[in-house]
Structures are given as structure tokens and as C-alpha cells.
Amino acid sequence: MCGPTGAGKTTYAHTLAADIGAIRFSIDPWMQTLFAKDMTALDYDWMIDRVYRCYEQIWDVATQILQHNGNVILDLGFTEKAQRLRFVEQASAINQLAEVHYITAPTDIRKQRVKQRNVEKDPTVYAFEVTDVMFNFMEPRFEVPDEQELANGVVVNEHGAGSG
Image (tube, rainbow, N blue to C red):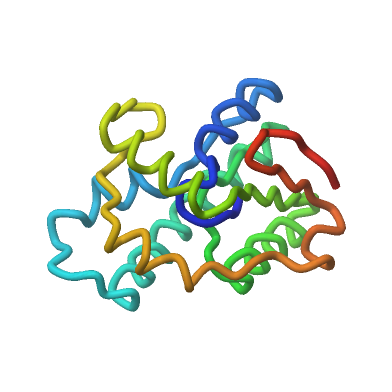
């Protein structure tokens, strides 16, 4: 899964995991549980270092599931193309085909979803409050996947319709 803040990645991941009988890994609860109490500022370098630590542990467990013919959904944000490429290459190294699912929605819809999620605090999609400052902080950092990344992928628009 990749997409900007509020696009619907975790909601989509829940549905897809149920549809295909997969184990879902979502980065937000990992980061909230392991590192939120230590965060003193919105420092991208500090956060991404910890995201990468989680990636390593998640991939270790995901690999074990894949080796037992299971399916995994990696709802890890994948803000940067290099992050996505890393996991595609790791999957290929163990003879697994990775699909990039790009979840997208217009900015105004995403902002509204985040505000609604902050109010409702549904535990299936809410790990922590995303403020306007956080939303705006992450917005320019998301790198949209290109055609090559999506050659074996899926694009999901704000209405949940898939293509690709």
C-alpha cells in the first residue's frame, strides 16, 4: 500500500486482507506503540530512522509468513519510491511477486477523512491524531508511483474503484 495521508490505505488494507486471507502489517500502530512517547518534534529524519527499524522487523515476520505460503499486506505508508523498491526487491529475492497498490484521493477529501478519523477514533484505522501540521508536514514528502512501479500494481481512487 502506498498513498498520501488520509487516502484510505489502512481501510483498503483491512478489506483486502479479509478478501485474500492475508496478514496485515500497518506502520502507524508500530510507530505509536514503540516510539510516540519519545517523539519531541516533527523531525522527518528521526521518524524515518524508526520507520526503517520497524520495516526490518516487519519484513522478518512477513518473510516467515510468505515462506509458509501465506499472504501479507504491507500497509507501511511507503512515502518514498526507494522504500517501495526496497520491498519489491526483497520480495523478488525470495521468489515472491510484490504488487504496489496506490491509494489516492483529492487533498480536500483526504483532509476531511483525517478530521473524521480523529473524531471517531475507530481502532481499526486510528492509531494517533493527525493534526493539520502533521498532514501538511507529510504532504510534500509523498512520491507518487510511476508507470514502472505500477506495471504490476493497482490504483485505487477515492471511490474505491481499482484499476491497473
